[in-house]
Image (cartoon, rainbow, N blue to C red; front, top):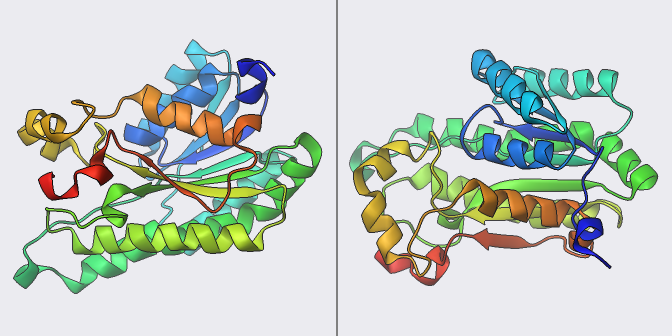
Length: 262
């Protein structure tokens, strides 16, 4: 029982949504570095293509870009169909695409809830539903069928910032994760990672203004790195994570333990 066998994703087929930059790029980079064939998708076609080319050049795996606006039902269906046209199976689906919205309570717009619940929750369900037959087939053929949803510590604790729709949508995503895990067959697992602060496009402004403070109140004394989220995904994708399902795993440097200080 060596480590390489427990976390092996070589030659597995992976889809990472929102994989063109930020946390999605960190996750895609980890899979490619460990020999997987990784598809990435987001609205920004240029960023997706650039990231795919860079990650493929590093290898040893391969990265392929398929642009798409995953807030739209038809685009999710198109992406699923295109993956199906290219591959027989999908071993790992990482639902990472997401958005946030901050505004004072009195000014918080109704549109924020529509936008964030659609992308952060509803389309996760849409894409998972569409790709589940391929994921089941991958589990039956290769022993690997995984859905990993990227949640947030803001869905576990009350954030200090006024991001009402974001925290609510991530809590909903965590519950969706548990519900899906109860419905899919035993050889497919569904889990979520509740991420703390990572340097991403979503958190850029916050970290530019207060990274030292945010890191300072965490027990780990730092923000997350690509290795932190990548290692968690490898664990859940390999044999080592096979008996874990319906679970929300904080990858947060201790954020959940110190909610009142963030």
